[in-house]
Image 1 (cartoon, rainbow, N blue to C red):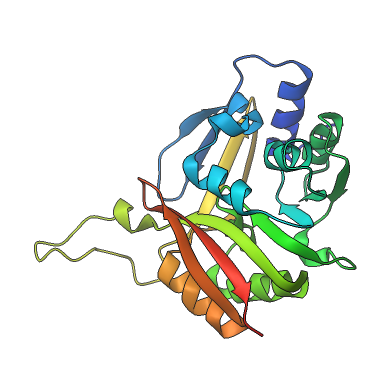
Image 2 (image 1 turned 180 degrees about the horizontal axis):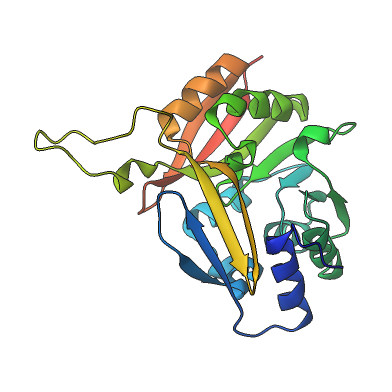
Length: 238
């Protein structure tokens, strides 16, 4: 069941098998290590932040939950909203957890390798666009998602603007390295003695909207959180 390269999925699996006070250690190239209780990834609707609750309220029709993890969002939509939900995650361990928890339709693969079906709502929650790994691949991801949408379909996603992490000059301007977009970083996770790092993208709303427009989406800012995070809705214009 364990895949040494799938630290997050293996952690979910162990918590699912024996829930307790286990923690996942996370960090990025911009932030220090932070422990996250694994119970957080098994939260109920009432335990979710407002932007996730709002996204689930706005979800309709046939649903693809991209990066579904343990299935907390998909299970709510399936069991409480009575929607048809397919949970997708490239972690086989996470998909096994979601399936054992009762998510009826699941598939373990990358979104870029997923074909053959279309949906009314695509969910990418918990900084979902980050899966593309870099700003250069954001447009590629949006084009892929567009190909999976039915006419009138929508994408609901959240991300964060990391501009707040940077210091300001005496003139009040943010001091940002010029080498790359400031939302491109390395993300790390550790569970017990296993560690994994991978590229991740946090994209500010303005840049998301600009990129989405090039692909043929109209973007709406639905909700802003307290920590420069936001929920956005993308609708196909053509």
